[in-house]
Image (tube, rainbow, N blue to C red; front, side, top):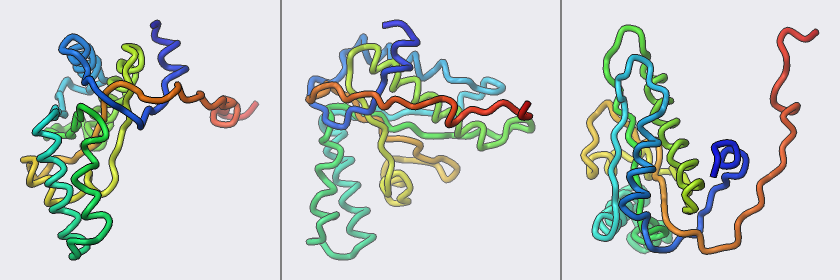
Length: 187
């Protein structure tokens, strides 16, 4: 698939099943991430790849964090939490890991990590894989950060769920670029 076709037709695919991306597909995804714009070549990101037991452990962390938030072990969000990572056969956790630099502010480094995730989404689509970028409370919870071994300066930018799409391809919304792009100054 050519780059413009992938860019113009990619949609999130939230219903995923196995198998996980093959080793070759994973390497293609990872290489796409590593091509993100990166001011000063700081490589301000790192990624955790979870399958099988990793997904189970992540579900346990999600449940621990939900219980700490709501305090009721029978609350729906606590009971549902262990199954959340099981919605795909593979999850890549994208972590912004900024480095001190006099010319590259932290926000630029976080955006670089976000672009790396976007590149993986596009690569997944080009490879015929399904993918969806998720965040929500699990991306910001300090208990989950600690459980995953994040350092104090690091942030979760995305849980990238990857696998095979189970449904019919979703339609691509048609947007008019004129609604979002304007010449400046107006002539």
